[in-house]
Amino acid sequence: MASNAQLADLEEALGYSFHDGSLLVDALTHSSYVAENPGAESYERLELLGDAVLGLFTTKSLFDRMPDEPEGSITKVRALVVSETALARIARSLDLGAFLRLGVGEARSGGAERDSILSDVVESILGAVLLDGGTSAAEAVVDRLFEPAIAVAIERPDTTDSRSRLQEILAADGRVATFEYDRTGPDHAARFTASVIVDGQVLGTGSGGSKKAAAIAASADALSRTTFV
Image (cartoon, rainbow, N blue to C red; front, side):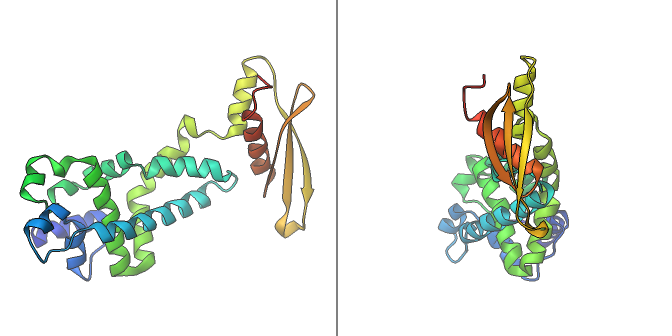
């Protein structure tokens, strides 16, 4: 079991100091430990809460950083950021395995290094921070822990928007897509509809709150078809 000094080191890494230290202890407690130590609380309820915290604040961060991207692109990047592998990587950067309270059998079988457990504990800690410090504290910890992963995920080649992918496919054959736009609505709530045109034919249409978003949506529509290839 981690000492108070060790837990203080973990808090420093998190960038958050708990008012109620028992919440952090619970967030580090696996059900196998509870089975052997009646009265202890496992992290499972906190994990459920932390999953919602992580989903909300990573989505908000991506929403702010990808203002012209459609829902599908944001969802794709978020999936990279909150995957089990990504969460386990963050857990290892915090050395969470050294702080876990595991049952004897689970500890012997390598539970402290298991991705499934490590990813769960990252979420349980976020749930604990929310209960202890509120939404602002939870958002700050998510930003601190996940900012590097978000930055990398946004720049990954496989998250390139559909407009860029369409142009790359066409360029291989010496062709290019052009876009035509229609605008509706008042200035404060303008809505754009784009048509993507290749070789004089409309291959897809899409709408969005900006020309870029509409063009990306139209390109995604074109990519969903096979006739342009």
